[in-house]
Image 1 (spheres, rainbow, N blue to C red):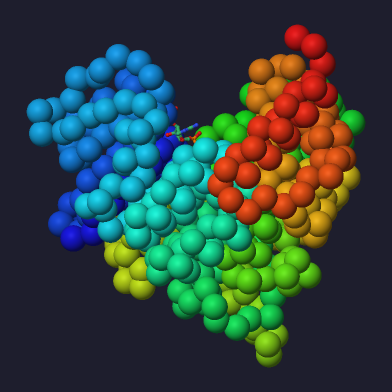
Image 2 (tube, protein in one colour):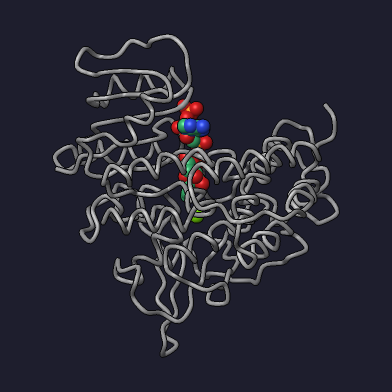
Length: 378
Ligand code: NDP
Ligand code: MG
């Protein structure tokens, strides 16, 4: 029986993780759950899962929970769930910079981390991996591309390889003419062709900031240099990523586009269990397509690669600027085509490396303030 803490249970990944756990009640037990503010859904989840401990980060009223569940609210309660003593594995499915704290708390408590929150590695990859090494815990990739690479490496993140080939769908706006991008709405940018995800990552797929984050995530997880990673647009999202070895052989991992697979595998590896999802039907697909990334369409991708190359505080600054730009676009304050210029203007400053959680949080706040200063007045 694996005891799991699900942090971010009300989100897209969190909800799928609860479905995975419910499928094998004899194998998985969700012992702790945490979310931020969606108390209606959280209360429903708690009533059906009945974890030992449930925490909502945002302040508010007490919610009604079954008598055998301990419920608490606020920052301390949220932190307690991230480091829940009885958990074997903590799934960090919080979105954004907030995930870093959850990841570090889980590692500090000696827990293996199933890591969906890629921002933890983008903003604080060195810190996260150093702490994981010191505590002797594993970081298990949940992001589908990184799960694919991990599978191609036989679950050994230190195994030798020549190159990593990350695939990208191209996002919701991949076929919109370039001159029409300035007038796309948030709704259009959030209509992802292949995946159903939370709003931030869905927008980041349209801009391909997400794929830039994933390049940085792969550099940390697999010790890759920037030049060892190639990104390909692959419209079908059936090949989740590939690894090329010294002799030129390429291994790919294929599957239907569902996050339930990588979530379940992070819980069970190296074992594979059944899954209720449909199978890949290659004969029906007929063909799989690959294209290089068009940088005119995806300027955020180039900005992310520049940050990966510069290192220091730039990846953390990239994430903070990206969060401010995404929120501004989703709330109608800037146009879609203003996202990349806003990030670029924010990055145009010296952003030195930060090595502790406190310094990263300070850097994150400073960058957000600078990004907000570039926003048009409301
Ligand atoms: P969602 O927006 O759907 O969910 C986010 C979750 O995080 C919710 O439970 C939310 O709580 C919680 N949350 C948000 N802000 C905070 C905060 N400040 N403190 C604590 N909790 C917070 O996101 P996704 O599930 O789509 O993504 C989660 C992570 O997984 C992201 O890092 C994303 O990049 C990554 N990922 C997601 C994929 C997907 O398919 N969705 C694929 C690969 C990676 P509440 O709703 O209660 O406010
Ligand atoms: Mg991904």
